[in-house]
Length: 151
Length: 264
Image (cartoon, rainbow over all chains, first blue to last red; front, side, top):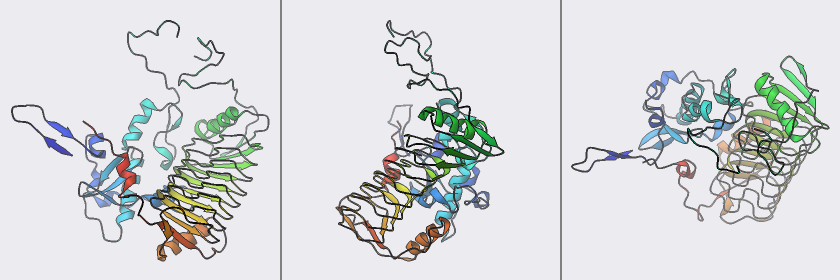
């Protein structure tokens, strides 16, 4: 994220070239700073099949010079601020992502309750007994708007 | 608002989608966490309605569909961990856009099975048509017979395993993920691929643009042995590995980058 302000202007322009999970959520999550909060995540239990399935394609990346994992469900990077033990980079990235998703903190999950048009599990396929959302979607109506004649 | 204000005779639901008349099938059998119904005589919409009711509304985690009769677009968009078993052959676009299910198909499938699968496992006991696993993003797709052309086109993750032969343009514009082909491969294997790996045990008719033999390492052996073991595929044959030569595209973490948006 890069910020700039012209002299004499009170406003501050902020441009973001990549989506940051913290920006979407408006806060940083504790597990981004504390490895002990992701250590106990069971990747096998969180994924279909007998191995880590889709997490095979999740690896530790870097964003703005900071280690990060990409959350495909919100198109955002989730940065990792603690020291990652050598040789466990991808494992920690996967655990971080699963923690983020199962806690319901991915922005895509936040949007589901309001916007999804089809029934689906709120927290995704990683959490058993998650509630179903999208069963009662109604077309939004703009106040004061009426359909043109003939429609 | 089905039927309201329609001059064409076609009605639309609140989402603006065509809403053909459909009633929930009455032949659904439920036994504990298992559900089962016969799809013979049901419409595509009825079959998918029954699947969604069982999986989403009733909390059923293991569903068997009898006699899918090559109907298209079955079990599309199921976004929950569950098991689905087709006793027979679905048609085109089966199991597309799924995220979580483990599906077994005791038959063959048409075009584009598991297209855009996000996660899960789809196992097909016989052959599959063209575009198998098109744009798959994650999960395992196993076809125990032969498949048609353009397998894994635009693949962005996941593992496709074909026990038989594959047709032309397999792995076309593949971007990530893995393909394990136990039989022969048609012409233009891996044409214009960006990344990922294609393993072939049989003969390759020809390589596509920028697809080159790759170096084998221990991670390749571990991957193939693990996938064969967990899916009960027996002993793996010897494979040759093919990768992107990286002369055609400037690939630099394209997957995350192409998803970046600019916020003002």
